[in-house]
Length: 119
Image 1 (spheres, rainbow, N blue to C red):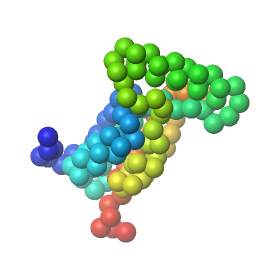
Image 2: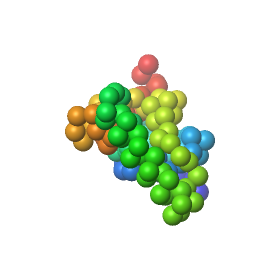
Image 3: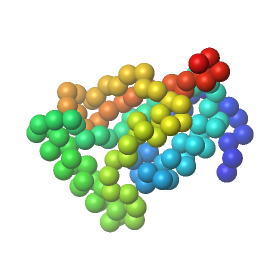
Image 4: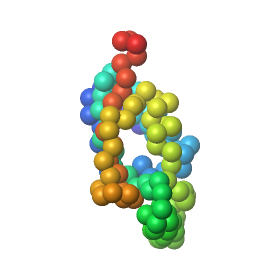
């Protein structure tokens, strides 16, 4: 399915973590092709916290969720993808991140596509 319009806002909440890295890259490639220069992508996803007990607890909770969805739905992936790498490869830069709470395993990030004609 081709996207036939140009979009200036893309929103995805707790959806992209269901894809393998290869499938996610293919999806972002298709969506990025339909994004206007300067388009914003609002993203809310799971993440493993950076340090301490929240890292351990968040990692365990996320693994339990992946196990459950693998059993219940046949989910192919088993870990949170490297969003930053994939989005950067398609010209999107993070405008800012906000965890749900300090050291949270839930995070929202606004991304903006860089207008390559202005570089």
